[in-house]
Length: 422
Image (tube, rainbow, N blue to C red; front, side, top):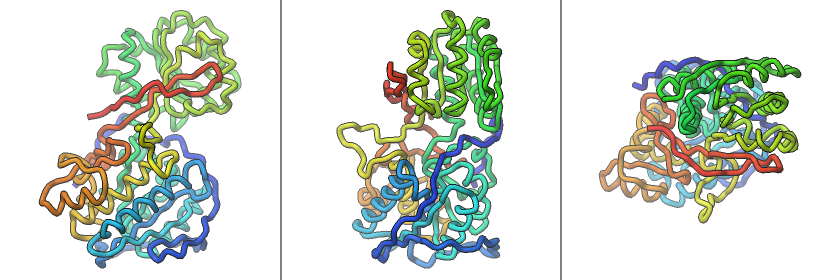
């Protein structure tokens, strides 16, 4: 049984912005797109869910979001097509049922009930951390296995998921460790953490501080500022007069950009590096980053979970943000069912982390199945090249992060990729 590790703090991570729209229906018998909205009901499961010999996967994604949900849905469909071309699972074609996560918990909850009514064995999604925190209990109460490609909230680290929740995106706690490592690698001796004072920033800052405790660099201060505060001059001045050589800034796009603008009015000559989190990668307005003094802007480096396949010579198709993560969820679920010789959710959950690490490396469903049939353990490595999940948490043990900077136009520029974790 997986045991959740204690974390420094629990809170809501930044919520993915998603829009509500429904996709068109498909004539493919193995794929169903639900365009109906049903009343939300409470699902009570009195017994362990058993398999019926055919794997049915549900996809709960924001279908109307062309930047995020659309690419992930296409990636899941591609994965299922390739799985079925390779012979399917348990000698049956895998069936896919697609439902719209929408932009609210209410929409997602209705779609979850629709998926449960369709008797899915596993669900890929939700995409939003907020939706996951609000609805995961009803999914696991129904005894279904869940794999989210993008819900990175720290709060999900300790969610009572009955060992049924997995994710292919790294938790923000892993990102916190990568940020701490980046700060330490500057060679500086003193760092101050600045964070937005909300349920996103506080636990993130706690996690970074805990990670920095294992590094040579010393945390000399923590500064919190109110979300939406139009005047951050006091907090910026406090940072400027400190003897910190490194600033770790943890905030959402709008508040993080606002603090950088306030800091731009101060003398930051003693500051060598500013390390920011993933939300700053796409600022509210690039022209605001462009408007920063070049000396300050050039000090900014950021760490963000890799959203696209890192192989520029062989880009993942279909393309799109976190499409590889959704693709990996589908393959891991299918391979776990093959390994378990069962489509029962609990059986799949027991094997899901096992097929992701510590075996013979394979990169496609067909190759992995051949390895299983040869009597070997497998280590599925998807398009990202790193797909190792911890059995005790269901989270990636390591992940690829993009290290980025900003150019003179205020646009983020990939500097290099780094793998962080164990």
